[in-house]
Figure 1: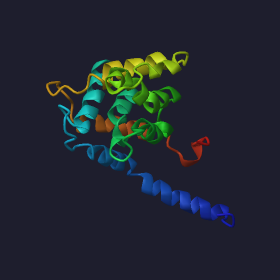
Figure 2: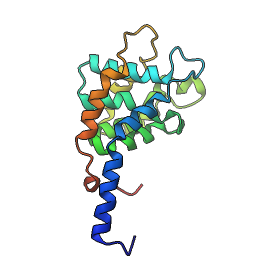
Figure 3: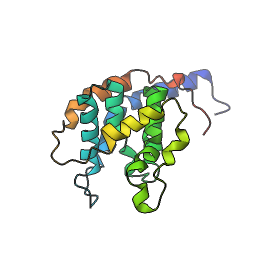
Length: 183
């Protein structure tokens, strides 16, 4: 890379952009991997994701939040212990810092509903009590995540949300606009 020219990198970026034209299809395909029986739950994670997005939509959330609710657990298949961070990383170039933070931290906040049953700290989320988006993440988990395991809830299909995902991902994904911070 050190010896690459401007023209070579422009050529490579053009190829990357061409490849990334079907990014939404790959993301939605990855989401569909959640459509398996996890055992024990009344619905699987795919249905949970659709239901989370439906709940956000029905609540009048903006499109960014609806899509984030749809994709918030997409990392469960390959990153079950920090799936929120994976989903947040996928969403980061396309959502606000607020929504990115909510999705990245929703796992900690969601623990409020079950950690105490498993010997964990139900109030682990309280370490973020002074964060400006604390209440937003509490609301996300309370309204769109922990409630979204109801097999009788009238849930919209993926096709309903697909145009929203396409609009969000088309919004600002220019390669050089990304300000990636060290991890």
